[in-house]
Length: 257
Ligand code: BJW
Ligand code: ZN
Image (cartoon, rainbow, N blue to C red; front, side, top):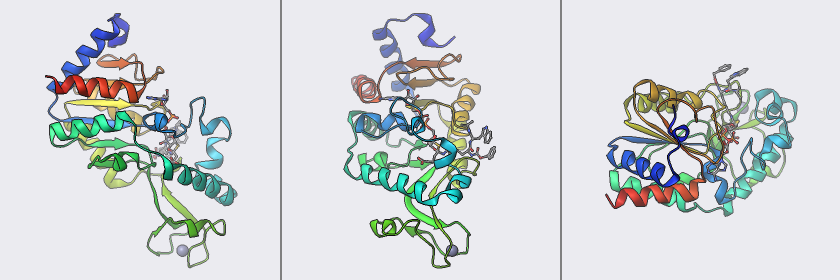
């Protein structure tokens, strides 16, 4: 039974979680879009989510990109513009504080908004790629090029070979970057606690990482205002709340131990 189901008071749940986190020597963080929500980043599947306006396969699949590259590039352009002005919230600063306390804190993320790095987290493993560069759809061999404002002057942007460029993010049906994936699984096999923040746990293989941790008998803590497929699993402590409120509470508690 998960800890939320045992009827612990919210205070006791937080206290127990602080205890677990304080004892952990090799914790790993795993984040999704909800981690950035309080910084003003839209999620995919929430009430403010992109998938309420567009079908996921139209924007986040290679087929969608081929069918309407202008639409997909406009979407990424709008998101990039929004990322320019956002700032990490208190939950990010709490993670940085935890990193300083422990010395190292790997963060596996599905996000491409760059907020973890902006906050000062050093070891960020980007499972779904990034919006820093774009590559040739036709894989002509040209190196990835930085995504800058000029790229949006004439959409869709093109490679020197004439093919359409694509952002170096991972679309549905595509393999994840090999190195990032290997590192993420290594961490799931070696950590002594995983803290999962702000993901619906619906997208594979990121969603399978905490399952490996649980299989090894190590604790998984979830922070999410909503229930997810992880919430009710044995070994999971689920705190129903917002990252920007819960993470500072936890890390402050840890620093008093
Ligand atoms: C808060 C909060 C607050 C709110 N505080 N929390 C059938 C056919 C074909 C493929 C598949 C299939 N079945 C499974 C697959 C595999 C597929 C998959 O999982 N599909 C499922 C959807 C069914 N996965 C893949 O294709 C992956 N590749 C792969 O598996 O390769 C091998 C393979 C190939 C082919 C077949 C089978 C296997 C690739 C996945 C790529 C995902 N790409 C995207 C877009 C690119 C990046 C970008 O543009 O940003 O990644 S889609 C989108 O979803 C994005 C996200 O990273 C990802 C996850 O979303 P996330 O982060 O969980 O966000 P939300 O919105 O879902 O949830 C937010 C959560 O936050 C909610 O729970 C809120 O409650 C919470 N929240 N405010 C804390 N303040
Ligand atoms: Zn090319």
